[in-house]
Image (cartoon, rainbow, N blue to C red):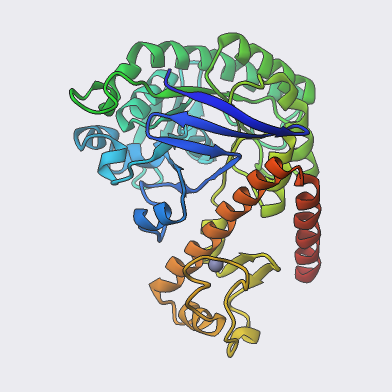
Length: 390
Ligand SMILES: [Zn+2]
């Protein structure tokens, strides 16, 4: 294991920390942009560096299908292949495979599924997911889990949680036996020779607080270097997401990183950070950007709207990002309407800048003791945005 979490300051349950990984020191709480197919859609890597993103995600399922993990291993691993020198996290492939619904079949051994690309048949087991992730060579790999669907009754959530725990054990055993084969770990003369990727366990248990507790406790007995709360943002109401996070966090060790997968809106990520979550990821800022939905300090705006046709102002008057420093809403609306590829680039750049700045505000607020005020501000803005859309 090559990971350490240094906590600098706490404020209520929130923690301001530095997560040291082989390829980067990540200031937490952190938001992690999603780079599905070895690319954060529409953004070149140097922009991500300019935004000071220290860690991004890659999706195991997508990279396994195309271009293939063995090809990426031959290219020196995912960092080298995509020219991203900072930290990477790969998911286990479980979430994507479970999103395939009709195309999959689950057994004790693993999951058989059909590719969404060409319909070809594939099999993922915990061991295979670990082999793929080790070939990709992320700083953080994730245990292979079953993402319990929503809604799921108690019996179903229990069965799914038990399977995930058995798979967590198998994931960990296989990972520990083979993680020295990660490209940078195994490369002679690399600055990181001998350092190891890290494997996080994933808490499941559906929307049942006691099952979440049991899942967390049994994972902690296995002693992972970090823990994720999975199976959220699968269609449940937001209040339930918060309730499940609140019910799980007390059973995860405070001296290890805690990651909530697949969240959320700006006020949600502020709220979860305030509850003690260290890491979050979501496709929302990037996907929304490509659909013209912009997050700003004044709430959300839809760049398609006619009211921006002759608006000379920036997307967000207080945003320090290069888009707001240079381009008008009128121009950005035109790019979007004309379906210019630059629209996706600029909208994504701004939205990610907004998300990363939001986490910077959270980190500053933890240090200054002003996190409750920040949370009130973000909630009020989100309520106004929701009311405006209604
Ligand atoms: Zn901006």
